[in-house]
Amino acid sequence: MSAKHAFKVAASDILAGFVAFCCLIAFVAIYRQNDLQLFSLVTTILFFLAGVLRGANAQNPLLTGFLTVIGGALPILVMKLTRMAFTEQGYAPLFVAFSLSMAVAGAEVRRLLTRGQLRLAFLLAVVSFSGAALATAMAIPELMAKWSSERVNRPAPSFSFVTFDGKSVTSADLRGRVVVLAFWATWCAPCRQELPDLQQAYEQYKGNPNVTFYAMGGPWGEDTIEKESAFANQVKLNLPLAFDSHGAAKSLGVSVFPVLVILDGAGHVRMIHNGYDASEHLARLVSKEVGALMEK
Image (cartoon, rainbow, N blue to C red; front, side):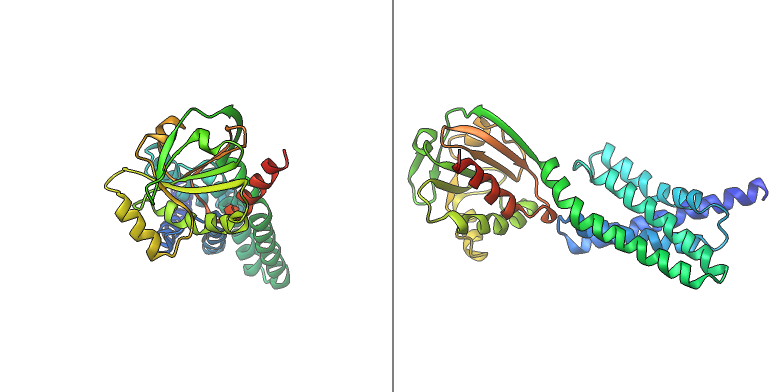
């Protein structure tokens, strides 16, 4: 193979990966949900197809897969470094792992098909997708919970806030109860996705006098109590609502949204959960944490 032809083949492989990446971004833009499981599954499909597309004359499926992945990994790296997107911990390495394995599998499937080894190609495709689906279902929820949750044990500073019915609440008032504070804003898309999951956890404990939940809005952006109340009514949110008019978020170190802060009965911060991703099953995570703190 001449150097010119080798360069052309490599460029075509990289271009195929870039096209797959563009399709992935288009899907994310249309779906508009934070869900790493679905993101990973779509990645496997697109890069498998890219590998199949480029694998007809592949002498080395591993090299073909690697070059294909470069076409998607480079834009992700640029977007991550410039903080345009993919800033969440784990997204970039998981993308590389899923896209590389499936691009290589796709290239090998195409190579087997061109040789007439139909059964072997079919078996490899089934094994590849089954492995990807199993890894997505079993590993990603645990990884997301680990990456987004920080377990600590430190005294919370004094703070206060006002409930939507005008009652003033201080951190001293909350002593003796496990407290879940969800800091959110109406303009924050992940916040709007998180609150229904949090409500599931609240429903489990709403009759328990030893557990307190508050969805904590505040004067962030152009938010007001009226605007947040209207949104809560619109989505039928039953969580107790509060407004951070006294700087509770600042006292607790909250500067981005959404953030969950869970305190134990002694007034210690025990868990800080940053961001939201549907794949981690937040209601289950919060319920488990609250239950564990109640037993201590």
